[in-house]
Length: 246
Ligand SMILES: NC(=O)c1ccc[n+]([C@@H]2O[C@H](COP(=O)([O-])OP(=O)(O)OC[C@H]3O[C@@H](n4cnc5c(N)ncnc54)[C@H](OP(=O)(O)O)[C@@H]3O)[C@@H](O)[C@H]2O)c1
Image (cartoon, rainbow, N blue to C red; front, side, top):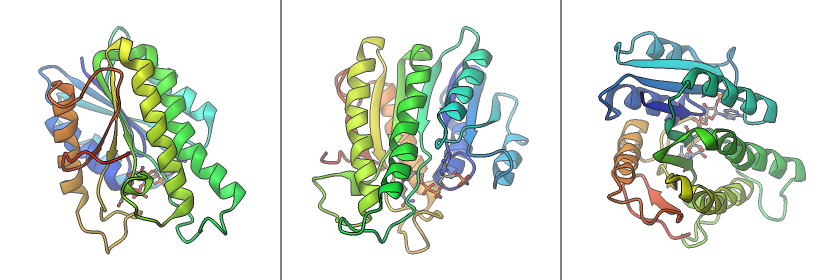
């Protein structure tokens, strides 16, 4: 039975991923979505409503996964593994992220701020992927949500602290693709575009619905091996399927 794991699933792009995955993930069997949230006492009302209204072909299990805490991530992974039984994870989306100090420049960057961004945006996806690595399905896909700001080839120079962490998650993706290639797992990073969420703000240009429908088209194409490239080699996509320069 297909299983999907997602972090930061309670709002923004993560909530929309939960919504669209619960209605359109191509599967003949029952789908379980392990929906990670930073805290079970947080802003999770919309996700709880979604979880209680899915069809009987889909179960959304809401589980704590705080990416600032290695023990929380490991406990999330253990709960998933216990619940999987003999099943495997077909799709892991490392979505949760922070951009907490967008005004910092390379001249004002704070040590603690960079550590926090590296912990949540880089170590989080690294720890969760590692903890689930033996339970990823052959032909499974791992998606790391990144940003065009993490591309050295796009030359959009802002949000220093965040962009450094997203450049790091891009390189993490390259290594994960190499390390998971022999398990036939593909790893990609995905720029969702500039999206109207709390992080993207009202001035953003696309809705979460548009972004996520594009992201899932790319994911399905990678899953069908139409566009995943060579096993062992990462790809960097934008939500509309364009490849992004590293
Ligand atoms: N929006 C954009 O324009 C844009 C552009 C490029 C890339 N991205 C990337 O897309 C992803 C999703 O962004 P978004 O726009 O949906 O952001 P968002 O609206 O700010 O939502 C962020 C999500 O991440 C969760 N989160 C934050 N810190 C966490 C932690 N320590 N542990 C677990 N979860 C945590 C939040 O949970 P809480 O509700 O508990 O805070 C929330 O669910 C991020 O990786 C972001 O960098 C977004």
